[in-house]
Image 1 (cartoon, helix red, strand yellow):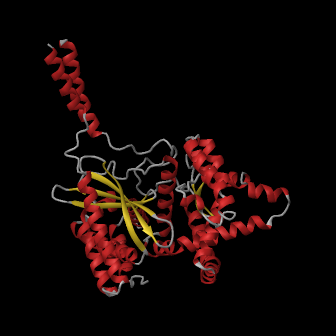
Image 2 (image 1 turned 90 degrees about the horizontal axis):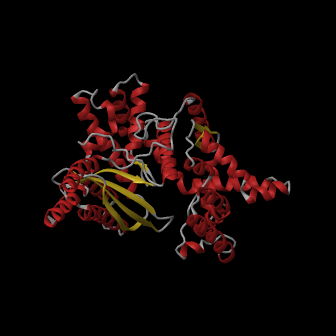
Image 3 (image 1 turned 180 degrees about the vertical axis):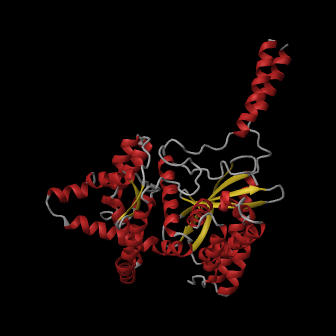
Length: 206
Length: 257
């Protein structure tokens, strides 16, 4: 009888524990640590003159493109219009996410005076996603708290969002994109054209 | 005994999937009149959008014509440490309003932090020019009346772009007015019937903010497809974060793909 009670309590507790596949918050944290280390190394090399500005840019963009889950970000930021878009539009839009958005972020971040970073917390949000928080130290200005949202697609971690002080990159872009589509009668093509135009401008140098 | 056993198993079987399926809490309570937590086009109710867009364009013009040039002169002429001094001084002047609002929100720890910072920086930080409290590990916190209203459950009401001051809302705009009248610096000068120090501080605050964030804002303006909507979204997200002390989980009801 007692054994039955003990076993039932054990199983009840087991069943009521959060059902996360396996808590990979440490791996998530390591992933972010790796990407950030590579990024900062590139910045440091550029500052030390070991890498030319162009080379640093190429390296930096590569690091970000490998770490970010471009297809997922594309789907999320297009929101409900993803289903409305044709396969060609979806493909073109996904490509534009990389060139018009991520590459621009890469260039922008490369120009910041970041000194180093410290990892803060890492926790699972659901059974695929993790929020990893870090603080970037800057020689000029207050430190920046950056939160990375990672998704484990079964093979590897990829970044699907970044946020600072509560402001999410993906949410902001989604609102922006939806607005352009709405103001052009629900045409996804209008957004694609607008992004292509932005892409054509020379990216800001610093 | 058997009943207990069955109850526990049933509870376990029911609770587990429920817990696994519950997404992280996304706020719905603080924004009663606007769209649900996951945003589509308008994260914040914007019934006077054409008017707001006009003010937004006006603000961009004033920034280009007045604020940006003045700020460029300011950053060119003023050494780094002095710019930091100005930032610290202005932020110290803002501590009383933070204290009041932390108290109104029942955040006693925040109240203590703001009070300590005001005292330490004013007395040991050369009248606020040096952020001594920060070196001691007492980091800045911010609280304003718009945030207090939000914590009391008041929603934004409607998005408002204020001339010069930029993105706001009916709630936060009201909050700003209350903050202005509860600020001891302002009260003191209004009592003394001398207005110019109040305007001087406001002007300096604008220049200091632009010196710190101007580049970022410029870049966002350039890369956004629709800058007005981009800033509106940023504003709504930021205020939601400030009111709830955590981010809205944007992916909460997005498909898992």
